[in-house]
Length: 81
Image (tube, rainbow, N blue to C red):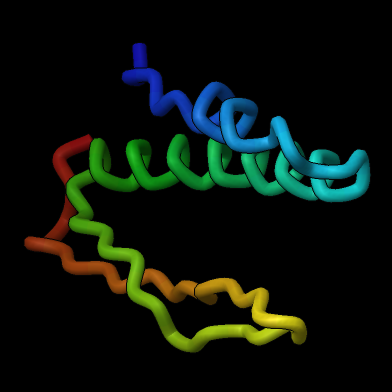
């Protein structure tokens, strides 16, 4: 069983002052992050080291921005799995 990452719970706590469209965007991102975290854990279980690195910052105007990520993988050789 994979550990819980609490993405959904943490995201919901932050949506109290957001409008419906913003809340929907947060839910979508939280769902995708949950899937990403599951994929990272699976890759680690297969013997990879996974680092997510900011590749750039997207500016949406009016002061809003978001970090864009790329994965960096390190392996020690063929997996015994």
